[in-house]
Amino acid sequence: MNLLQALFFPPEQPGGVSSMIPYLQERFRSSRWEMDLFWLPKRIRNKGREEIEFETFDWTVYGESPVVQKYIQTYRDYLWWTKLRMSKSYDLIHAHHPIAGLAMKKVFPDVPLIQSLHSSYERELILNGVIAEGGLEHRFLVSLYRELEQVSDRLMTVSRSFAEYMSAYTANPERIGVIPNGFDEKRFKPVPHDNGVPQLVTVTRLVPAKGLDTLFKACAELKSRGYEYVLHIIGDGPSRAELENLAQALGIYNETIFYGYTLHPEEFMPFFDIFVLPSRAEAFGSVFAEAALSCLALVGTNVGGIPEQIEDGVNGLLVKPDDEVALADALEKVISDPAYRYELSRSAWDKAKSLYSLTRVANELKKTYLQVQQEAKS
Image 1: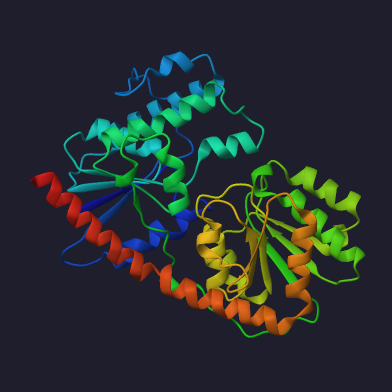
Image 2 (image 1 turned 135 degrees about the horizontal axis):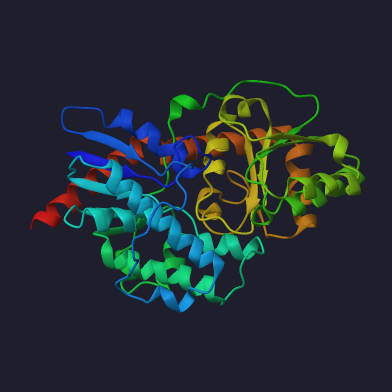
C-alpha cells in the first residue's frame, strides 16, 4: 500500500506529530508498505489564489476576522503547494492537520482520507488570549470539525478526552476513532543518576495555555518552604520575556534555567528527576509520555488527555490547573521522598512502554489503514 502522511509543520517542528510520524517510516518499510511525508514549507506565504468553499458551512460569514482570513490564506497556500508538487498516486492519505486534510481531499477526491486531530487550535488561542470564546474565530474553527467529518473516510484523534470534546461539533461522534501518539522506544534511554539537588524539567512552548506562571508561583512556594531545586525550561515562545520577568519578581530566577528551543530534548531528559507541566488544556500531552519513557516522575494537571496517561498517586501526580499551592504540595511530595519519586517514575515507564510504544501504535495504524482501504473498495 502506498501511503502519504500529510503534515502541516515540517517534521523537525516540536510537538506530538513530529515525535511520531517521521519515525513511522522505518516501521512501514517493507514490500507491503511504502510511505511518503508531505508538508508546507515555512517560506510558502500568500501564493494561493483559489476560491475556498466548504460543504457544511459558509466561511465568509466569519471572513471579517483577520485570524480567519489568515487561516483561509494558509489553506490556499497548502492547496497551491500540493498541486504544484504532488504528482504521485497514493492508495490512502493520512492527514494530521485540518488544512492538510482539506487540501488533500480537494486535490485527491477519490483517495481515501484518514484525518487525525492532535490538538484544539481554538482552545489554545482562547487560553493564550488571542481570540474570544464564542467569537467569530471560535465559531469558524469549531465549524471545521463537521467539515472534516464530512470529507474524511475516518476521523480520528489522540485521546478519549479530545474525542468527547469533538463530539459536540460532529454529527456521528460515536465514529471518532482514538489512537494515541506513539514513541520510538530506541530514542528514550533511562540513565541511572543521583542528583544532590532535585532537577525539575518542563518541555513546552512558552505560551499562557501551558500554565508556566502557575509553575513559577509553585516553585516560589517551594523555595519559601526551604526546598532546594533547579527548574529547567526547555522551549521557546512569545511568553519568554514575561516569564523571565516573573521569575525575577518571584525571587526564583537563580533556580530557573531557560534553554530556548532544543531539537532533541530526549537526549538529556533522562538526567533530570521530575517532569512537571501544569497545562490549562492538552489534547494528549506527548511530552508526558516522552518524560515517562525517560523514567522521570510526572506531575501534571487533570485536563484533557493527561489523566489518561497519569493515574494520580500510581504513576504520577495530578492537580487542578491554576492552583499553585496544590502544585507546590505535589512537587514537595516527590522532592522530599526520593523512594516515592522512583516508584512513580518506574510505574510511569512501565505504562508508557506498554501503551505508547511506536511498535504498538504502528500495528494499530496498519489495521486501520487496511480497514479504510477495504471499506473504500466495497
